[in-house]
Image (cartoon, rainbow, N blue to C red):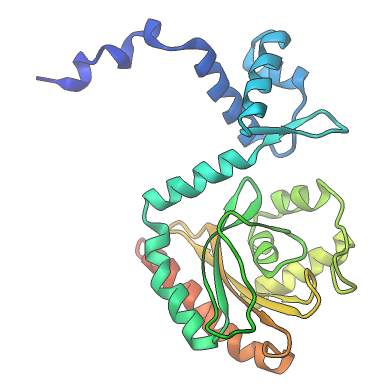
Amino acid sequence: MDTENNSPYLHDQKSLIQSLDRGLQLLEIISQAKEPMGLPELSELLNVDRSTVHRLLGTLQKRNYVVQDAVTKHYSLGLKVIELSRRALDGINFRSIAKPYLKRLSKETGESTNLFILTNNHAVCVDYEASPSPLAVTNDTGIIYIMHATAGGKVLLAFMPEAIQQKVINSSPLPAFTPRTFTDASTLMMHLQQIRAQGYAIDDEERYVGVRCIAAPIFDHTGKNIAGISISGPASRVTLDKIPELAQFVVRAANDISAELGLGRFD
């Protein structure tokens, strides 16, 4: 029996729940936008009246699937989408592939290690391995990294297509968290070119005073930067003179994970 052809749910449009279908279409439109979108534009793209779209957005906002900017009133994806993305990533075994390298990197460097993914132009931590040292930098899954002030955020920015990179950088202010934070867009762009050339990023006490991080990009089988791996430690241990040596361990871990994901197999 051909199950696919006999299923009443695949071809019968009457079986679709219209409001759910529209809500999912709305999420897809918002996810594909390069910047937050307003109600009129969303209504036009969905081809549905504004009052209906407003109700759909209200429901999605209540469930944290979208967030609304208090000033512009524009909508973007919410943290619930990031959470579901993280769970989907678990389903394709990404974390289990990366876990041995996360552990190895922590053992090699003695520092906490972090695995993060690129989701909706944000860097989100999906796994970590704590340092065995009593003095260590802690982390947790679901943490969103500040893109311009962390090694993880900067390494993902550096390997984005330039047009998207500029959109992300120019979409919001670049606040200072420490005296070392990059707050000027043009200076940050030049810094990202350096990161791309050397193959890894450094957070030199740019997010927190007394903490340094080193991150390297992870690529999928197509060569697209989809994630990264990093170490975080107190500046007293992650000294400037040790960074080149530590960076080699980070880059090797990232390259090994990329190879596991198929990079280079289909050249």
